[in-house]
Image (cartoon, rainbow over the protein chains, first blue to last red):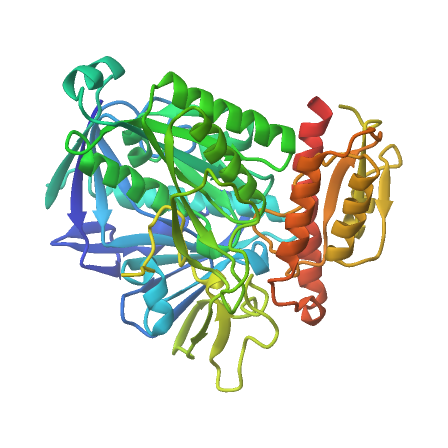
Length: 426
Length: 129
């Protein structure tokens, strides 16, 4: 499967009477974007704002971050089974607007959403302080259930991202990159000497407000399956969860998953990138057993030599992570796991809630309990009403001088478990 | 597995509101950690864990609420995997800054809802298994 990704670099976003992209500037008609967002009758209102890197702006409570894309050649469209009609994606040509994001915000489950600071120490911890952000704060109609509100905001964000992406359809990309995968047979013939490596991606799937969708299917209803890694670049996986901000995968991360991109980078050089296996993180123990059994079975069928496993979330999914690791290693396949740590504020506690001797190669996204002080910023997009209720914050969070004392948990993407974050030991 | 095969141990009042009397619910107004200890005691009596004792996103001691599914019947043999999971969950409680006394009532409702959504997802699985 061959996918050509065309990158169009956005250097500024401005509101305008007409939506268009010209000379690297995205002009957005607020009125048109609003109409797209409010197609859903469950949303009462939406307000748009722009946050640029370096500006004294705090965005909260952040729900999702999405990169606008448009499918210009090949089967299907962006976000198949959700926004576009169902079709297998991942081939042909897709354009992505780089350097910008659509950020959705809303008080769905107050304590579960995140913070993006565009400047100051908080900005160092989130990858989304470096993007030009078109922020949409969505308010639901009265009396709506939180899970209906979540769905309405999720879909509104995706619709607006697709609307913005469409503006790039006739443009010429600034840069083009080709991602090509081979069939199993081709791979073995082409790279007989290279180790066969796959990516096992664990998807948050613990029930309402904790879900991820694959081609529109709720991931808790899937058994582990195989994707062609280019499928995610067209939006095969989207985020539908309101879990702690630091280690959930926003849709932006699914589209730009660094594990997939790095494996493509090494494909044909140091390894043979065989494919991507997706699995879930359900709450029921027998389901954890079934999914990890299947993941190990698929790894065996693919005759792999090595696997990289990424987790999403913390606590309960630590058990899925260790079950996957243990069972895949038992098949004689080497594993590297990517997780993050909840090692206490002093960093001295056990980092994971589960462990096994087979997990002897671990990459960490950082300690989510680490305390940071976020100074007062000039402008808030969204509301600070919930800032004391976000995971990793407390009523003492808001200090007298307007600064916030919080754990890294509150910052969107701070300890991301695909490596899409800024923390490093280097 | 039907409703006669499992018990729900919970401190979440929303669970009592959502589920009818057909369910075997043991409700105590105790802390998160005490719920875990209660479940541990029952595992020693021969019950097995059916749902994971930790949440996927809300850390122990961040939320006061927890609902856990265990088998209704006791087995002669202690289930070591259940014991390991519950002991690890109790250990995990120790590393989170306790602050649940400081929240407003609106947040308590959110915490109840999140615990309920996790339990509901477990119940759906339990009922078809």
